[in-house]
Length: 111
Image 1 (cartoon, rainbow, N blue to C red):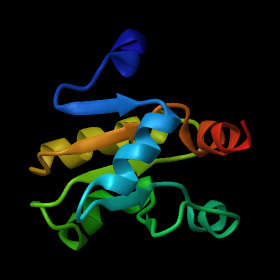
Image 2: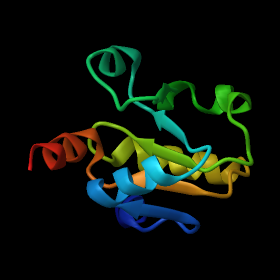
Image 3: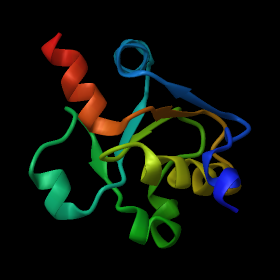
Image 4: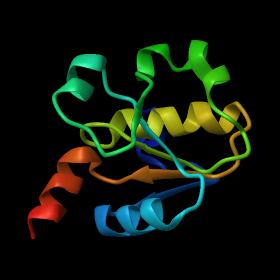
């Protein structure tokens, strides 16, 4: 079980922050999902990101169109990887996960 948690998710691309940002900003109709809890989202999030907490994701899947690419992130990359599995199981074909989460994204902006 431990190793499965860290295994790549088939059909989900995991990108480092600079690649994630380049693709996110250049992909037409991209939907950016922050799967952190509302208090984390309010403390700071990516421009244009929608907050769909992992804890509510299964019950709110109807809020996402299935024909648009989804870019997903969390604090460190663990919750977003779990969210990517849920997206995949619910028929979303194009999913990009941010490796290292918003912490890595913030650090890459400082460089």
